[in-house]
Image (cartoon, rainbow, N blue to C red):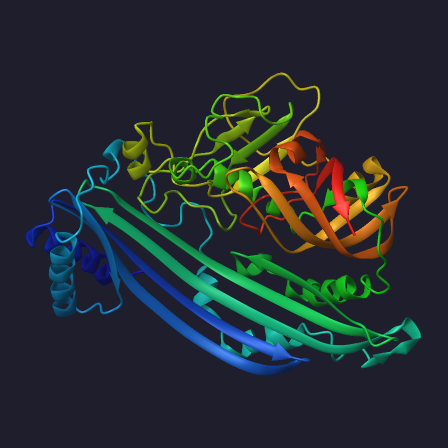
Length: 462
């Protein structure tokens, strides 16, 4: 746990900064402890334990701003560090837009650090033997013959990594902000490589994570990774043309990220946003909601405040296809002369609805209706399922994109063969205008709650 001495050290840093001549200051104390056990073919490969503690100091002095960080946390070193940081700040160019957030915008309810319920005291009782057991005992290597030629493939290698972590973030400033976040995480990742009868190699990967040990199920990971590899045997090329596209929930955030980036005030200020001037406009399909849900209790990746200490909230980013807000931190608000919001989306969530006209005041995740990837394949009937993006980019200023993809051809709602060496090209706004449906199969362990998505009229080139 973060102890009182560490909190007091942070408060001492704030006091020292003001005494040394800062007009205002913000202190961010971060502490992260992580244990990693890597395995290779079911045996221990490497064991790592690390502890990182650091203090980041934002200095506002004489109309100038600087941010500095250090991991030398004894008081004498900190006093010298802060003095030199202020001297450096005074050498910078003035920037009148820099300021602390207004006190009424900052989090007042992040007191214990565990308001979200994602800190598990069981983390502290784990033994080295248990950690090794998670990595080794959940391997498939011991149970799968090295050669499975009767199935058309041979197991080449299996790499696994178990990790657990405990992290804390404490933010205070001279305006009275004080907010604490604590979180634990238990994760297991496996990548399996196989070889077919012709010597072609294919890899598949899977992972699981949970903030609490009782909800952690690493035994499911390796079999799913193997299945992902086996399904790739026998890829075929497809003709270039327009296809219906289903994107698996594991990678669907790829087509959401450009939207979030374009709604960031920094991109707008830099003239690098295809959504500049979009506020209040109906640019996306009717029935599409994109929400930010950072305050779902019991789920990792949420947070009660951003890096400035500004309180997060569950809110609409896009509602029924209409852009609701930009992501605007204090600096960008002053720079652009617009109202501040939050610095970025913490936990974006995609939902589509049909035939609904009513909205309630409170934002809640709609109940699951079982509409998963397979449901989207059945809905689309024929097209290409994208399960991975293998490179490419999106132009932030125009929204034009080109992505290399990996996936499967499907017909009559069923996968028929893997596809290879294909590109999808187009424009993000055009792509989303052809949205057919979104599933409700977003994995709760992911930062972005993006489900499987189905689009029409997508340009594929092979």
